[in-house]
Image (tube, rainbow, N blue to C red; front, side):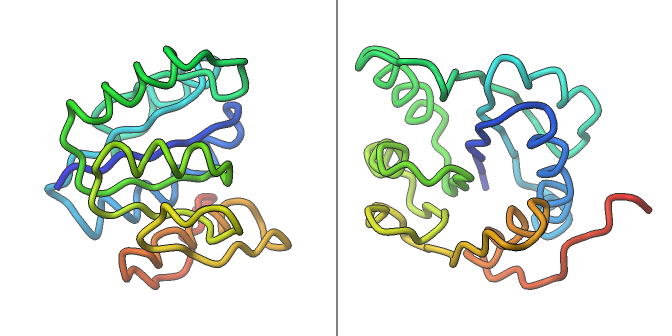
Length: 149
């Protein structure tokens, strides 16, 4: 199984996503897990043992259609079977749909009809728990791991 997670945000957001990645790897030990992060956050993954490869894309930049097409091509070439999206932009949902990835998991907000397994967004909870909720799209219902232990 090949999994890709699109994780916009800075280093803090990446660190809060680590428990989700670790739980994902624990449930799918043979899976190759890649992440797409902003260039400023790439260095956070030097300490993650759950991630196979780190790709960069500046989600906050004014990307041209060519930039989006390049990312689309990279994702298609890697033959992912599952995609997790932390963002809620419908453009990212469209991008994932265009990749042909069979399972596309993200927050079920209006405009994200491109997701196959939408998960309810609970913005009032701690970010690490909110990120971990995405695993429900894969049937993983374990509690958010305590990253402090």
